[in-house]
Length: 242
Ligand code: NAP
Image (cartoon, rainbow, N blue to C red):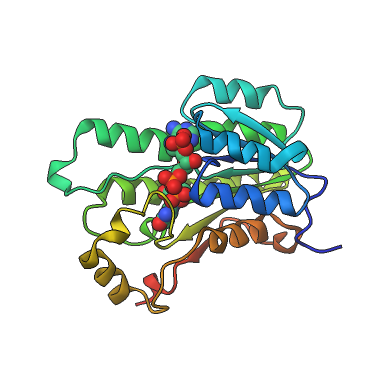
């Protein structure tokens, strides 16, 4: 059996309608998993549902809501959780509004914590949690104080959950990407100064694509990673090594 075989597995992915989450959903589907794809209602989410076909279940709800927790509580079982939903609103530290502070922490941190707390109760035969953090969960960068704070928080949560849930056979890891071409980054990549900054920082000299992140998530969720827990797998083109 291939280690990247998920045909008897059920996977919940938040923020699955676009970008990285969508690539993760399609990659698990291709490897035989049943995929529960969550995002707020949109044409993108409906289109993903058609693409997943009978291997997919669509949850059109907000990851910060009670609704998603109730849906999780009603599951018979869950094998894999991917906490991917997240936002970023880059701005200078001294200009950050309380609303942006609350919004980013609410989805990036609080929702990840609450969804995980409910989801692991459904992992009765062991399981895997993968948190999509960021290279910004390892380093700092201009105009990203709240985002960096939120992703560092999830790096800490990953380690603490990994220790506490190991006796239950639940592994908890993070994938920490660099800049990836998604709807989140589309406008930033149109700014030549920003691209110059990226080129200076990135030894591999290119931004990533969502599939680069999806393959790391599949590895960490697989049998091949059965001794890997509390790890943060940087998919960062070398950003953090210098
Ligand atoms: P994206 O293109 O903006 O997609 C974000 C996804 O999350 C969408 O499906 C969005 O759907 C969903 N989402 C946002 N708020 C939500 C909420 N409250 N409830 C449910 N779903 C919600 O972002 P991305 O670039 O793919 O990023 C995905 C993850 O990777 C994020 O955690 C991000 O921080 C992380 N990351 C991204 C990069 C990058 O360069 N792209 C780098 C490092 C880490 P709706 O808005 O329609 O609900």
